[in-house]
Image (cartoon, rainbow, N blue to C red; front, side, top):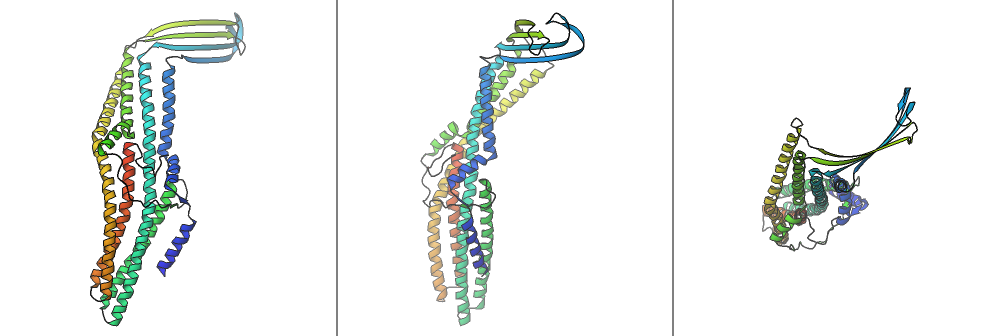
Length: 425
């Protein structure tokens, strides 16, 4: 009765839950992922940095100021040439660096930062997609596992009824029914645990896609996992050339190199041209007297109490660290890609093997149940057959979704979808 009420409650609850497909979940979750939102912001910042670095080769920096001052007593006003208690000044200054190593270094740095930001956005998209698929598959897996526990409970009830009948007729000892009652109890407990796990998985999926409540995942196509369309060597090549994490590492190294170059350029002189226009008067828009100037200058820093040397040392360390990170990632590419590649192939083959195992376990249980009814088998053999069938069905569910998740992990490494059944928002 308890199991029946639980099943009715779950069925009623599921009918009222919002349902979502995998592609819709991917589209919604990616837009809500904090890391992806932050990555988009970094792209915008990097774009402005790139524009600013390029504009310094064409446009000067421009500063405009206007002030109106009221004094307690009159003083000589350069604009009117007389004593005035009010002074209005307007100044416009344009400054252009004719030659500076820093300008070229900034151009290289901003180019690398923009490349890194774009690659970081792609990495965030794949990471968000991987987390979303994990939550989505967790719901589907727990749904299937709930079906496995239901079948286990059904078999335990049937076996318990058979055992009670055989004990009543004297064909079996009472311990047979006691052992099957124990299996029935365990099946009921497992059903409750699985229902709880399914509820939590639905809540997690809802959180991932921005819904404050449980969400039901629409079942996927049951077609077996296909072979990968690329070889292992191709996967490694793709990862090194377009994999988001490798692109980010290379961009960080280039940015660190540019920063070091800019710091070293502080030893060289800077040539500048400055133009200034100043107006004096007593009115808010001064016009009594105008003064314009143009200045060509060169500055050569000699000594700033070691601050320049400290900055160069820090930049050199950052460059060395960025080089080490990039080299370590590239050296580990073969291992990481191979691990993900073989994990998918292993799980894909495991699905086929587990399907066979389920058929064998189901047939073995049928035979053992028939033999036990006929008194040709012991209760231990029947219980072992029940356990083997439940385990085989559970292993099949886990293998099926492990293969899909392994594929998503491989795609996150190489930065490319390998199948057309899922989109990358």
